[in-house]
Length: 543
Ligand code: G16
Image 1 (cartoon, protein in one colour):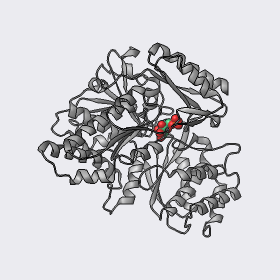
Image 2: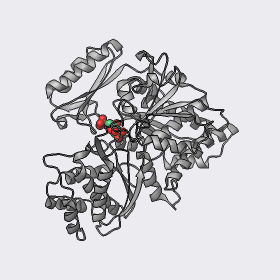
Image 3: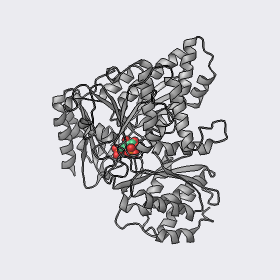
Image 4: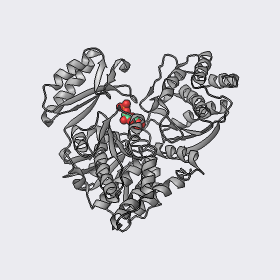
């Protein structure tokens, strides 16, 4: 099977991309991610793997996205995208880790041969790989390493250039479905903006002029993408005030801004109090590669911390689930809508959703939520941090397309559902698409942020990071809600949680940063810090 592997070419190319000594790489929540200055060999090897992945799939185009998303600017990483636009098949992940960690050329070849024999890959098949990258200064060199890997394997290479992560997912799906009955769209930037903007305009037409939306672009790739989008949508339909758009300012990316900052600190982006934001204004924040979005507004002066109200991924899920359920009912089609969350979902959001629709819980990571959402006719999945989308199964799409409406109201609901399928990125969470979805729902309900926020009240909650010597010793079960290792730590957490009213807490190793995350929520705001800090101390003491 490994006959035909260009060993000589790989060996030679690999010499230009030596693996740094003493570093252990691991395929995490969203691919490989760490400090950019140690990632060169990993990117080269991901190029090799990407080509093999495409060969395994008979030459279908796969995607490689160079980004570290919400992480600081000095980090970088690679996300791998499978042909339908979903994350890399999980069974390949351990191979990626092994190949990234091979310490010599011989070991590298051996680990590649293992991958080839395990998955019975025809090395002589064609390979096609499209790559994109975010605004990080380190992307240029890392992209070159990927290209070197792809070239050594003789893959057909498509350079998509500067892209948001969801745009790259979109392009992958378009390339693979072009000319088929399932064609997802034109595999071009224009195709992406047209698909979203046409669906959006259809959905807001006749709803009167909108009010301004302030968007924090995290000083990342979401800024140019948003600017481009606005060229396709008249201002009367989408009035955007884009802030934090400095993609060339050194150190600005995700710094004091962006979805992760806003969600974790539960406050406005730094400096917003001087940006003329007023009570009731709708605002949202993207993350560094624009695959997450969270909304928020103020109910009082910007300078008062208690004015801040967060409308996070959980609130987006509840808004989308309610709206889509109503449309399905009005349309008179029999479709099951379900929601997928993670352990980070606010307890009150889960309670709210469970009273309405089936809800399942998976470990953190779009790769888990996406597959769980595919089990429903309409699967709404959102992580509390703003990562998520809504999936319409092929049979649901067919049912919506082919239903015969029993009334003008049913006809209207069917048309709206049809346009929503185009508006919502079916491949992965997409900050721009999700932002438009929220705008559509609010416009169609004539709601402001306050009405949306009224669905339920979040339980007070906090996320903390704890730095430990070796986060790999932290192992979890039950969708990351309980620790199985280090031994005895879960019992101590349980004992502490038991001391507080309506409390919940869990601990899990991050798969994107070198830390352990602690989540805590309590019925009483006054008890929150004590619980969160108490659990963080238990983690630190166990180190
Ligand atoms: C990635 C994943 C998300 C996950 C986040 C944090 O997001 O795609 O599903 O919630 O990492 O993961 P962890 O807690 O394991 O560090 P992004 O936006 O950073 O690519």
